[in-house]
Image (cartoon, rainbow, N blue to C red; front, side):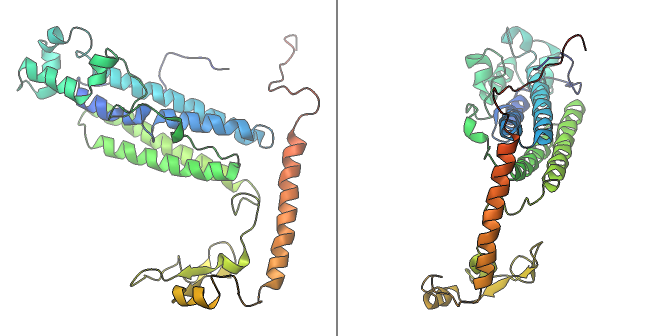
Length: 313
């Protein structure tokens, strides 16, 4: 159940109209790294977490709802940036307020031209309304949403999503000198950092969260890193200990020779027989465990999403 409060989570303000920046800001309204995409992603992911991970379901729904509130902040800011552009455009262009867009240096016709070329949809397609499109006018697309049905995969996806969104806000700040908009963007950017840490903490609270999914990595192929370009640089990504696995990277200096020698990694020395057996055993254990968790969490008999308390209690 959603209940809309008309006051914004952050009181968005703008100093003056700026249709060009309004167009840029659409990236965070209907773009692939924007607030609508984040809200729909976390909202969608939450359904699969409800039974087995009700605590993570609650977190995902909370963050999804906050992202919808951020979408409202972005939409409100865009609308305010179009003040004087919507409606009777030519009359508004005579006022000193709209002339501030170009610091009074442009003729009325140039102001109108700026507004139209910045984003024609505002005055041609939507009549000044904000719609889920990006700064190029491309409609929002469900392919922006990543929901994989595995909570650990979804949480890792969300870490990347929050990182990208933060970066977009950083870039947007470079294109406006309005101090009020900077405050709004700083708030939104910082909430991305908070959400990142929430998702990180949630991931760390799930036992056996690596590797993603159910099956363990095949030990025959796990440790190899390959010299696949001239002058490959050595570093902690291809030498030394593999983080968190108690294993060492094995650097293959001649991957072509190794592939020929092993017939494409199909004829390897029989040195990992025990590790393979242990992996197969682990796969069965993890499959049974994960399946059991899901089945145990499913309700018996009639399924109902909510349990309503007696009004008299």
